[in-house]
Length: 498
Image (cartoon, rainbow, N blue to C red; front, top):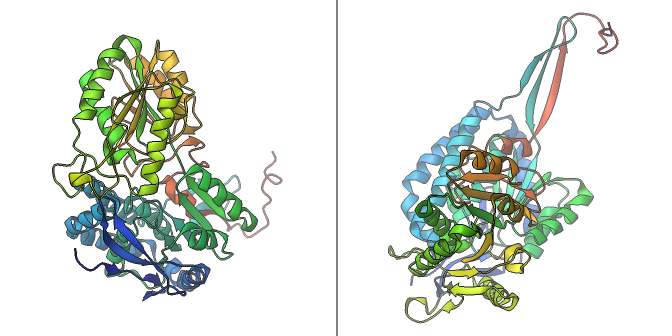
């Protein structure tokens, strides 16, 4: 194995060591003997320096015409496309998911570069007629200031792109703290922006852990927005820490996503969907299909086919072209998933396949869990209510479409849901009645595209959306402008009373 690269914080356009000189290692989850990179273990001192750099860069970046900001993104997109193979392999080494999926992660960032680059020539506001003569009125977007971004490990380039690029196109500067398990992919995306001409200090990277680096970023008085993706518990803590400074907070949190399969569904299509939805990315997606709600008439047959398909999945190192399911991100998360599997058995769910750590051979030095399927799951069991974030699928049987909708909605989360049916009436009822931010028809609960808003209801977040034009609302303020060229005082609602 080659000598690991040492990554430094990016502050004000300079690559610098942490103020304390401390570092930490990021290891390959498929082979924990391999150190992917050495990163700075940062503290409040480093956050302070990065925020100051972002604040210094803000006035110039804010005044750069938005189309010019967009052109930087278009140039960065071409660089990212050219580097796709290299960056995909590096992402697989640090995160674990198979190469086809890391390639997809990178393409999502590529799509965001194109999308936000195009928004630089739009950033639409409104122009409306005035109720008074010789008066003109419109609304425009204005940037907010310095943005603090905290991103997770499961989509180490896509999710940073969801946050960074809308913030930048609106004219903000930022400090990003990527997940300590997968920082390298954020560096790769930012390197494309730098090589495309991004000015120093506009984007600053500070690596480290939540308490020592994330918390000072959330609490910093000169940070105007915090955008966080992670667990619901941590999201609540972020809200508490940000409240005293009255900064805007966007939270993208957990999910417990249901896929409903009715008696009339195309079962082969549904089988492909649940396999991909439940075990793609080793189940480590906030949109993963973690609950399969099956109508009783097909439950036995479909359950048998799901188990057969799950048992046939090849688990291994994501760099192996034969692998279909990669490792869990780290030992701590692996132990958490195994604990939930034990809880499911204790609650009385029937373990049909998987349920154990894979060891020996190609699995000897990684964090691998066999794809796991439970049947006889009741709606109030913990494995049917709590986010597991691993390759674990719970099958619940219902008697009717109406019961399926009730069970689907009966969790604290509301991110994504899906239904498989040939009945167009039931499909439209499901689109109306499933209380989630995303609904799929005859497709699994994963697969969102960047030009529609992404986010959920209830404990999944706090109402903001990422991606699509709606992401611009988080990173900009609306300004209403009135121009009166009548030459006299006109009092709205008074002079226009009759």
